Structures are given as C-alpha cells and as structure tokens.
Length: 246
Image (cartoon, rainbow, N blue to C red; front, side, top):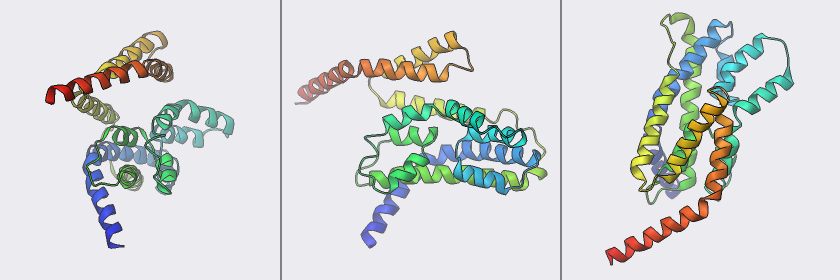
C-alpha cells in the first residue's frame, strides 16, 4: 500500500509542473465562461455541472445559446460533432499510449482535451514515474482547473465589471509556447513543417472558420503516407549517430 502511494505521489509531482501553464489559461477562460453564464441568467451550478460533464470549452460556450433558444437536439448533436471532430484524430494518436492504463483509460478518454493531449503526447515522462498515473493526473488537474474557474466565474460573475474581451488569446499563446518547446526538443522538423504548410494551405482554401477539420484530415493523410520513409530516415540517422559515438 505504501509503495503504491509512493508511485501515485511521484506521478503527481511529475505531472503538476506540466499543467501550470494550463492552469493560467483555464482559469481565465473558465472565469470568463462562468461570468458569461451568470450574465445570461444562469445560477452558478449550471457552469459547474456543465464543466464537470461536458468539459469542452467551445461547446460549453455554445450551449448557453442552445439553452436560451428553442429545443433542437439534433442541431445540438451536429454542432457538437463538428466542433469537437478534431478529438477523433487525438483519440487515434493516443491508442498506443493508453494501452495498459487499466481503469484510468475511461477517464483519460473522457477528459482528453486539447491541452491534456498536447502534454500527454509530447511530454518526456521521467524514469521511475508510472505512465498511466502521470497521464491521469495531467487530465485530472486540467479538468479541475477548468471546473474551479467556471464555478468561481459563476459565483462572482455579478461582482466583476472589467472587460473580458480578448482573454481567449491566452490559450492561443499557450499553444504557441508548446509548439516552440516541441520544435526545440526535436532534431527533425519535417512533421511540424508539413502540419504548418497544410494548415496554411487549408486556411487559404477554406477560410478561417472552416479550415480546422480539412487541415487535420490532410495532416493525417500526408503523415500516414510518409510515416515509413520518415521512420526509416530517423532510424538511419540514429544508427549513424551510434556509430559515431562508438
């Protein structure tokens, strides 16, 4: 029992620093969401329950207008699928990483947001740290940040009068930082350049409002097609590096 507690504590200590930037972004956006719910006429337990069960920021903001409008369940379903379609690609990418996580796999699937995916997919888990517990705490902490921010915004929304316009840029800045850290960590940048190039191309073709899903489909197809050549080239360079060291 004591050994298990040590494993859990070690995983928490390793995961927490990775989530600190998420904490700042989620609290800003969560507060904004809670305030938005408050000024729309909803009690604080609405954002609390929605952040606990939905846990999809964009959908939660849109849900406010859905609750205030006419009841259209099919429209709500279609809109939710379109907005969160990118998670299909996240899920495919995490299939191997979620193997062997036991009961934690169900929560990891439920709580996989953009930020948790970015950390769990790219983080270098220290030696001696259990992978499944590390990913679990990353997901749990990010979920906790969002829920507490939404609840506090819902409770104190009526007391806050400052202009919250532009707070959503916090998350954009955070993803730029994550991308730059990944760029500096990797020796080869073909995948990143392919992703950037295809995203820009889809942005030009489909426009800012519709480029997300086409760009993700294009990135998935192209990287899948070039996976083996890229892997062979990486293995070759690794072998050459090993020969030089010897």
